Length: 274
Image 1 (cartoon, one colour):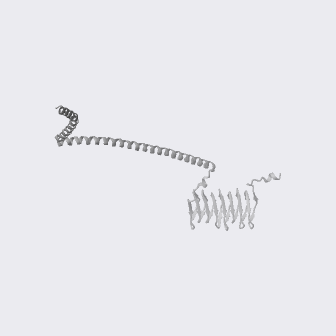
Image 2 (cartoon, rainbow, N blue to C red; image 1 turned 45 degrees about the vertical axis):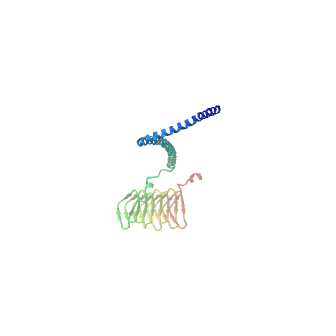
Image 3 (cartoon, rainbow, N blue to C red; image 1 turned 135 degrees about the horizontal axis):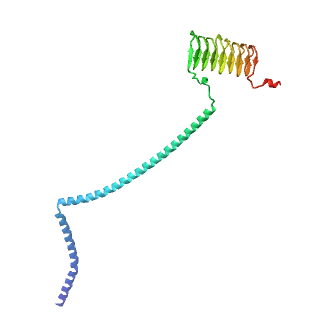
């Protein structure tokens, strides 16, 4: 009897030791079953509502992240644009400075050129393209005055005055004056005055005085020749009258009947012989 009693006590003790673990497992199972039961008890609407709440929370967080990223991108773009605008402004300032410097240099050069170039007489400032032509077969009785150049091929009885070049291949009875004169006609009666050069062509006969700053004579002249500069008397020239010039070149064959004076030269002849 004593043996069975001890065995019974040991068995009950072992059962008591094992009992808490089993109770714990049973409690876990009961909790799991209760949660599953609660989930089963939730209606479909409630489960949908909970799912929508979770989805909205995720969307809001992602949207906030996107907004932060967009704001960051906009800030970066604004900084890049500001840097480009600043570079453009710096470039414009540099270009403006270069343009101003170039313009100032051009103005200074133009001023220097204007100071170095002497003032030209109004007669030499005439445009060469403005030429008035008196055609062959035209006869004019009276004086002619022109602000441009004249090309006379006809016959004129009267004085001729022009501010440009005067070319005479016709016949003139009267005095002529121009900035430059070229005479290549059979006969010209009257004095010829030129502010520049004068040329008397081969076969031309001039009855009158000649005044110029330089000249070439290849024709015949009857009158006084006053040239404040060099003059060339060609081999075909025939001159009856005095010549007054700065220097004279007389080619072999020229005929001169008159006095020759180089009074416009820089040599004081009278002082040398005193």
